[in-house]
Length: 196
Image (cartoon, rainbow, N blue to C red; front, top):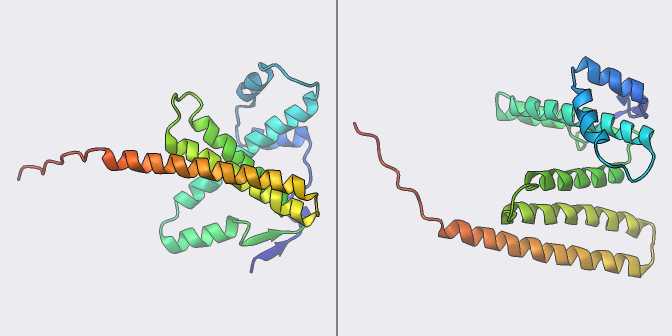
């Protein structure tokens, strides 16, 4: 069972843009380069403050995520890896006041977007990546359906969601089968033993 942490101690209250900038400055983040990419796009609305906050929080999220990934990857042995993972993961440390479903849904969205970035310039999209994108989207939809079921929404709403899930799973399965079949037909490379 995970330990309980007070939300104020964990710092999950909303930070101001100034606080986010200060944290990124400590980490020597290149905020200006990221801002140049963000502001060079045409905005649909006029929510510049909110967009700036999303940009700053998103950059901090990525930097801290990379730090966590590296910390786990650098574990000297399996026991250390398990201890580090438990210390970091949501199943090991519960944060009071955290919206667990909302966060899980967001992270499924983030995974979907991350996978899309991997195949952004690839044509055609490799079947394994396409299958991964579908299954990530399925995870997001299933989380939403579960939450909606708790709210007793109209059956028609959830029926459409389930139809979407089943369609996406069928597509992911077909793509995975195609990728597997392709991998099975790739000839094995001849490995020449080094001369003694």
